[in-house]
Image (cartoon, rainbow, N blue to C red; front, top):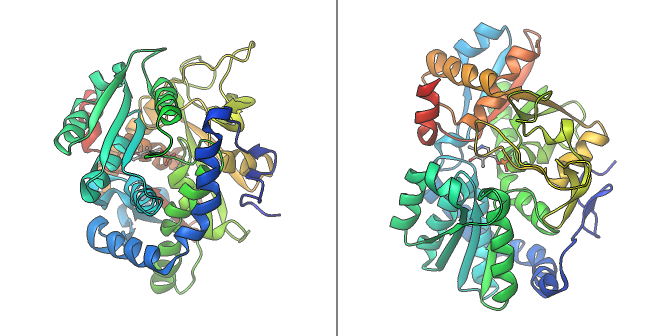
Length: 390
Ligand SMILES: *Cc1c(COP(=O)(O)O)cnc(C)c1O
């Protein structure tokens, strides 16, 4: 079984590029060029240098001794929280800005919910001297002020979006609208493994530096280059896809994705797309979508702003239906407890998104000799208010 994208842009029955005619030439231009450009020596050399000297890679693979003892197993944390700007999103933003530059683009647009992807994009635009416009729902602008302030300081223009529920889905619609109007000079940096082909594959490739590093780091520490389990949280699915990538065909490795149950999967305040979604199309991709009986996309909810997307990357929809990966749903309360636990046991304050992955140890029992790698996708600085309020 091949779990990667095929040459038509599909993962099994999922993915593709369901886009309006007006976007066709932009997306087609990207599709025709991305593999060639990211394979060029000059691209790879610049990407490697920036990963090392700007982002701070390789990110450490840390053996969490007290957390391991507590749960009676062996747990390593892949420390994406230590990256510049505080999460894995910068890996993809750097890859895409280098691509945009080589395609002759001078203006960058992005959508953001919690502001982490907007921040990563504003950062790489400052680095490259590119014009940057970030679309953000007005509701999110109000509740994510620290990230809004950072984006502005970095020179980005933050455009509040007033349509719909004024959150991520609406910001994405607005960014797509902008791209339609400015096809020649603008590149749209999507922040997760979502959107029309080739975005899910392109973002997965940029994030696959995570599993590439896990391989060599585990070989050095354990004398074997694969774990028994890989665990990561799933919003759109980019940190999980990057963590799984080099192990997709290695069935010795069990893959676990954790989505946000919000108040619970038996309530309507949830973002558990794999558990509750139905097949549909969202932002150009066929996947599982949270929708009502009329096919209207419903508003997702999670305490974590990075996980409340009503779709899921097509790679994960396929890993789920083929049973290559298992997906669990974790509630707000379970995630908040897991955040406190990691903080007190290891002195690491995790992002709320990553805390969902950490809550796996409350749901699933592992054996003492199991070797587990859990991707800590980001740090908790941005979530202090929520973490302390709990
Ligand atoms: C955005 C974000 C996520 C969710 O995005 P994915 O594409 O699913 O990885 C997870 N963790 C952190 C820290 C984030 O900022």
